[in-house]
Each structure stands twice: as structure tokens, then as C-alpha cells.
Length: 427
Ligand SMILES: Cc1ncc(COP(=O)(O)O)c(C=O)c1O
Ligand SMILES: [Zn+2]
Image (tube, rainbow, N blue to C red; front, side, top):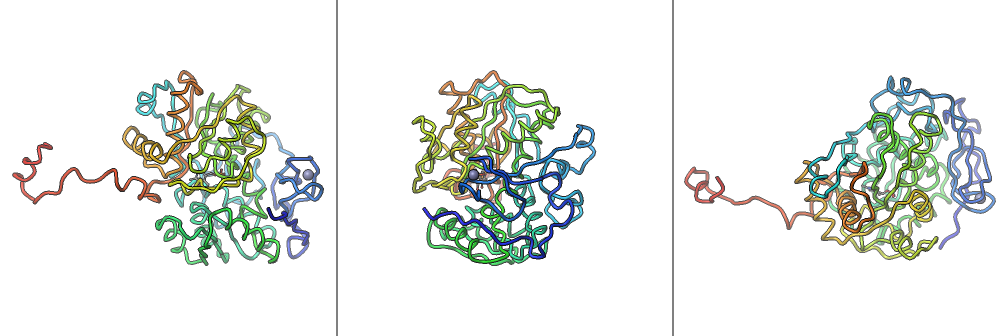
């Protein structure tokens, strides 16, 4: 493993941060040793190399204040490391996606009270628009010049699109064998797209090296990761708000790097702390694909450390073999009394079809993983079917058509005549 590089360059380039550049965020804090440092393009602790996250001094925030905000993640501006004028800067305005009551899927799985948080409705059709919007704000405030990322696909879409809208140069690095749809839906935005001969973990290593060498490059999930990660809190905030200002009892979340899962937990905890919801218990469940399940394996083995794996699964968006937030996922899941499960590629396909057929929601492979894991958790008695449950669909099935290409299609191909139609017996 390469040593993390601490960016010691004074940022922003001009040396002074704009007043209120990071809203109510006040500092960076190490998740391992709690050492603090000032806000900037830092991601590793100067004391122990541990990962940094954002610390705040939150003002009093009311439900009414949030409800009066825009119908996107900026309604939570006081709780994010972004300035008060964020909504007026050119950005993708992600968030406030639908929370669907999923009675049909619930009936199919024997779950009484089930919801789907459908984040495929974001501008580039995955939850990544949330994290990228916050990272973009940080990159701007730190006067960084290049907006970049290593990506398993969805992040590539989100960075390329947001950079284009913000008028920033973008450079996106992807594994060379990504789904064609994800390649094209990144390249269309016109930035630089580089395919790397290797898997995501190789791409990520290369990105860390470039971030350490080049000045002014904001790799959203590397050197501005503390800001980026905060975007996922909004998934937790929205679920609580959309349920009528209360927490669900169980939530099932896909895990790649593990950032999203840990930040949904942080979002719930912050809402409790701010008195926006009652302090009711919730369990967090993690979902991985069999062919890349290092966090699930550690959970089942009772380990605190995650042993890296070489991914081999159709769920390419979740194919991170060396997940940065793996140990923190284990913490959150164990602390809340949840579990982590993994499913085969065939179960992922089943999950995609089940969600589509019961609720009319076409999920990306990550959503297939999550629905299939939900099913397995119920069948194995790890998830309580009598408790209110939210399952996340974090991406759009149009991005991963190959997953179901061999399974679905027309019932018949016929001549354009009534006789030909009746001959099929499909009337
Ligand atoms: C659609 C989708 N869902 C979930 C994830 C997992 O996100 P995280 O890396 O925060 O665990 C990803 C990551 O790329 C993704 O693309
Ligand atoms: Zn530290």
C-alpha cells in the first residue's frame, strides 16, 4: 500500500479563504485520533495519517427553516460545508429524490412497512450527484483548477457533468473495462476521460499519486474527500424528513468504499442532536456483491479490519476491493445492531427484476445488490419484517443494461396483422 500523501500546500492559492466559504464547518478532525486541523484540501491526519472528516458548530436549525428551502440538497445548507449562497452558484441541484412506499415489494418479501429511496432520479441518475455537488463547492472555495476523480462509473458521470456546468476543467479516470453506457455518459460532457488498464483500486492508487504531485487538482473522493463525503448525509436527512420527521427502524444501503453508509448514519445522528427528529433506535444494514464483499466477509468473521479482495462481479459500481471506509462501516453496522450480507450475480439480476416488476423502478446493479440483500436478510431472519424499513436504490438501470439483457425482451416478434397477434395466444 502506498503511504497517503498529506497536501501541505497552503490553500486556496490566494492564501485566504472567503468568509463563510464552508458554512458552519469549522475544522477538520481525524476519525482515528481526533486531532484537528484547519479547513483546506487535506484528507489525511498530520499526526497519524487517519482519514479526516468535517467538524461543525451548528446553529439552531428548525424543520420550518429546512422546509422553506429549495427542493434539493441545499435545503440542508446550514448542515453542510458549503456557503450560504451555494444555491445560486452553477451546480446540478441534486437531491430531494422520491421516497416510494413499496407495498408490492413489501408483500413479495413479507415486509410490512417498506420504502424505496430512489436516488436514480438525480441529474446524472445516481446518488453521486450529491457528493459531487459538495466537493465542487469545496474545489471552488479552495481555488482549485481541475475537477477530477477515480471512478467505478457513476461518480465519473457526476463529476463530468457538474464540472461542465460549473465551467471547470474535468479529468476522470476509470477502469478500462467499465460498462459502455457509463463510458459514453461520461464522455458526452466533454471533459478528459482516461481509461486505465487496471481495476478500480489501481485507478484509485494512481489518482492518489497524481493528487500528491499536481497542484490545484481536486480529486473529489481523494484530496477533497472530507467535503465530498458530507454530501451523502443528505440521503439520511431526506429519508427522515420525507418520513414526516422521524427515523426509520431499519435501512439497507449498498457498500463500495463504504462512505455513503457511514454518512447516512452521521446524518441520522445529527438530526437527533439538533432535535429535528426523536431519538429512536435504527439498524443499518450493508449490501455487497459476492464477487466483491470484503466488508461483508469481515463482518461475518467478526473482524475489525477489512482484507482487500480482487473484484469480480457484474455490480461494477460497487467493485472496490480495498474500501477506504470499510472499518467505519463495520462500526456503524455493529453499533446499531444491523448486519452485512452479500449476494451472487444471479441474485443481483433477480433483485433488479423484482424491484422493476413490483414497483416499476429500474435499478442499476447496485440497486439489484441492495434489493437482493434485503430479501436474503429477511429470509435469514437478520432483518425484522415487522419494522419499518427503507431500502436504497442509488442508480439507474439504464446504465447497466447488460445485467438483464439475456433475461428480458419481447414476448414475440410478429407481422403487423391482427391474425398474427391472435396466433401468439397473448391476447
Ligand atoms: C450506484 C452506487 N451506489 C452505491 C455506491 C457506493 O458508494 P460508497 O463508495 O460511498 O460506498 C456507489 C459507488 O460507486 C454507486 O455507484
Ligand atoms: Zn489522527
